[in-house]
Amino acid sequence: MHKDKGWRFVLPAVVVLAAVVMFPFLFSLYISFTESTAYNIYRGRFVFFDNYISLFRDVKFLDSMRVTALYVLFAVAIETVVGTALALLIDALPKGRKIFMVLLILPMMVAPLVYGIIFKLAYNSIYGIIPVAFRDLFGVELNILNRPFSALMAMVVVDAFQWTSFVFLIVFSALQALPREPFEAALIDGASYWKSVWYITLPLLRPVMGVVLIFRIMDSFKVFDQIFAITGGGPGTATTTMSLYTYFLMFTRYNFGRAAALTIVILIAVTLISRVVFRTVYREVSYQ
Amino acid sequence: MRKRAVGLTVIYALAIIAVIVVNAPLAFIILTSFKPLAEIMQPNLKFSFTPTLENYRMLFSETFYFGKYISNSILVALLSTFIAALVSLPAAYGISRFGEMKRGVAFWILSIRMVPPVVFALPLFLLLRLFGLIDSIWGLTAVYLTSTVPLSVWILTTFMAEIPQSVEEAAMLDGASRGRILLSVILPLMGPGLVSVFILNFIFAWNEFFFALLMTQDRAVTFTVGMARFITGYSIYWGAIAAAATVSIVPMLIMTLLVQRYLVRGLTFGAVK
Image 1: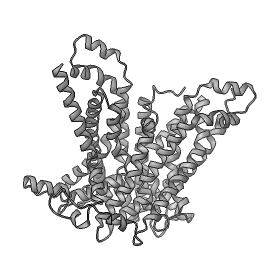
Image 2 (image 1 turned 30 degrees about the vertical axis):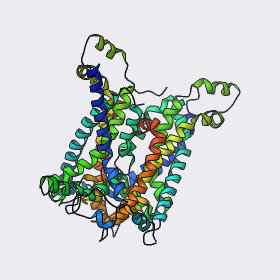
Image 3 (image 1 turned 60 degrees about the vertical axis):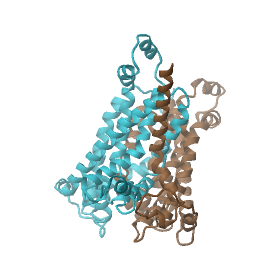
Image 4 (image 1 turned 180 degrees about the vertical axis):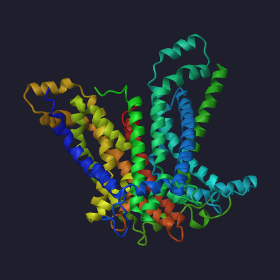
């Protein structure tokens, strides 16, 4: 085999990715060491690590980390539990599994912004269907988006409505591919359905759950569209995640230097995490 | 036997309830799009209404430019998908047939998938501005390549790996070059791979909001940004927004049906098949 020849085929993709990913990254790195603002974008004064130092003294940045962590924690927990339960439920159906599967994965194909619009209308404190239903049926006045914690949990609910379907799809597909023998053996031994789920199905699902968790953690960490549409980060900074905070630094405060420093911090964190992930999850996968 | 029948009824009932709850938000916005505006903003529970197409008429009227937004969205989606497929097909071939670079390239591409878009937003915005590409179809297409190229390379690699080497060996014995083999032996076998790449990339570009919000102002505004402009304004045209949301949802639902066989692979970058 000619060992050098493979690169010829990969080159076009590498050139494109170098242009749209690597070059911008290096540019961002440069900006992060300068005092770049809207008035001197490309020739800000070189300030070494000042942007990084001020970033970690920035209360709003630290707060956005807290908001993001809470959001990811609650959203991923709910989606994993409900999605797995749904997958087990549909897997237990003797017939019509495929139709139910397709009907349950529709939410994740829709734009997150559309979910933002749906729930902005549904949460409206005057005519939104959720506060109205609570008022008419239970006589409870809800002001969902006006209190910090309930606003954040309302954002988690939106995420869960859309992305539980992702967990469901992956776990359900994995269930279809599980070997049948352990279950037949358990049936002969007289194990109940719940016992075989707990002692056979869930342990067999462990590697897949790893993949699901990683994709959900990474993707909910990125959240922007829905929150931007529903609360714009408020009340106060209660729903300002790291993505929203970076956006505000860039396009309302025009502090490009600090924003660039923030993106570099995010990038380093994500690279470290995905390196660990890659080692553990993709170790077994081979493409021969 | 009776007990089993009861159990089956219960799990089917639960499954149907699950389908209803999961799709309730989508059903809600689609129904809302056929409601008169006065009834959308009514502060009480009322489930009957006279359906109207008024909201759709408003959405596609001269006041809003939704025809333009939709064609922008489709154009950017097609361009970013097509360019991605063009560079990814040979890349996938190289990665799957020349083992030594698999791990390095695979890791690099996976890392790009994990990076939040906000990381690329600032430098890409500043670079596009430098080249005068803000608010242009080509500028937005270049930005979308950050996502469509890694996704395409990855999916095509998994499809490529399923084509046995023996198919190529025959052609190689006849003296065909690697490039020739890719075009006349591999390409005809990649139909399903290319279709799923096309659809997954199209869905991504159609649904994308964040980059479009930053990189477009007027001429290149896409569908999602157009929708968001309804709510940031002083008065909220809920009827027209609901109609726009419905228009955005329907093609995605059709594509789901077309591509569901390959969804899992595409969504997890091949980690689950």
